[in-house]
Image (cartoon, rainbow, N blue to C red; front, side, top):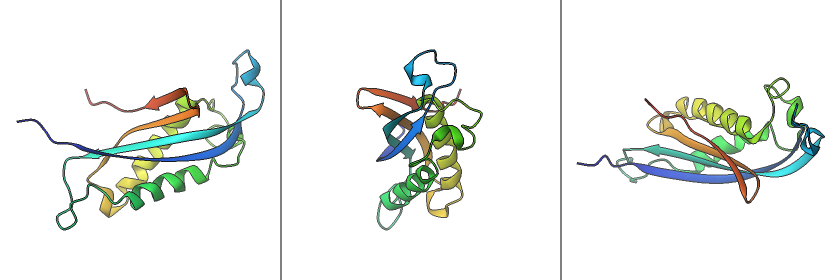
Length: 134
């Protein structure tokens, strides 16, 4: 019998500047983006009464709270990006790990896990981070 999984996805965006260290091109200079961020969680149980995996408002709040630290900032100045290169790959991992911690601390969200976080600098370019079990 197949395992049943539900996935929920929310999207938000931030405006921020960054400079890619050691890039050897124009992106090494400070420049800005409207970063689009997509967060997907998954789980195998719905709530009893309402039959939801998770209320979308809980998921949107967790993402919005995490993005607040990066929005309208020079990301290179925000820890850990003051020492870690602020690439879309590293930003997606950072958001993934921090949102996962936020949801683990929320009683209503402990039964879901973060599946993936995608960060786009432009509509046609996306970096996605996820963690797979061996």
